[in-house]
Length: 111
Image (cartoon, rainbow, N blue to C red; front, side):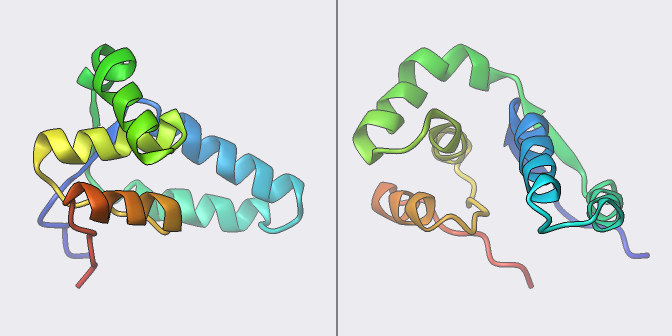
């Protein structure tokens, strides 16, 4: 399998969010555990780097993004990271995508 050429930078809460989404989807019957495990296996092949500065900025810049763009603090942490690092944001969330556009952050599009 070809190795990815880039890495994904995520807020430190990313793993908890993924676990929450998977757990809720399984509980509601949207996903089987085997499907979740296949997804997690796929994710293990993606180089993911957790941004530790997210914690330090939570009550400052992230809160400002929460206020300015009317986002949850979790979504605002992705926007704050993208703004600070000058990187595109990968999201399927419409509200976050619109906020990113308003903030001048490009959306990541896979090749």
